[in-house]
Image 1 (spheres, rainbow, N blue to C red):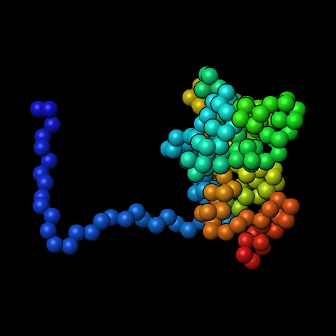
Image 2: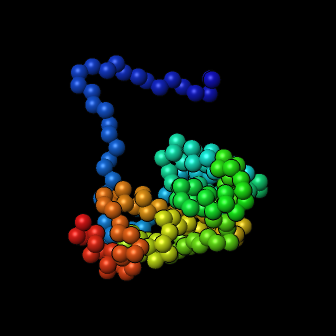
Image 3: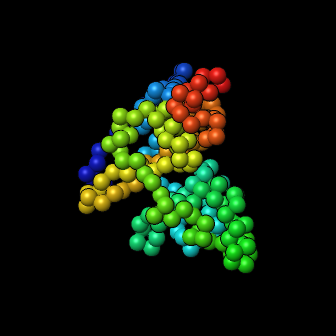
Length: 195
């Protein structure tokens, strides 16, 4: 350790404060969309393999306090997404009826939304978008989540972010009207202003 010198330290006395993180800027419909995006370039993605049981996926989501997992195949490539709605909704019951399996035998791959049914918004669109644009897009598709992609170093699409309606609600401090109630940005804005 001779390459490193000792750092001077001092004894603490008197009134010593503890730093607190700066309060984040409040989020509104006109805030930049990036303010509500989970940036996977800075935060590790919550992932799971397709051959894991649905029950294990649900337990993992509850443990992490999240409502979706990206499903990666053996090559660490995106195979799909599984959400709490997939697990707690009708999909498992339909699968049980169709395949005559037990609830604890259902795998992530059995009920996930596969890659070929996923959509993503390119980061170039997000950089100039507002929170309201993201909400309108999610409500229009009837989804709780949307992925954000950019071109990787090899030119291939890479998932670099995710938007979650639940996270946006937390940051806005309000419930976002359901898809049936609000289909346009104007309707969403009016409902949020009233709430």
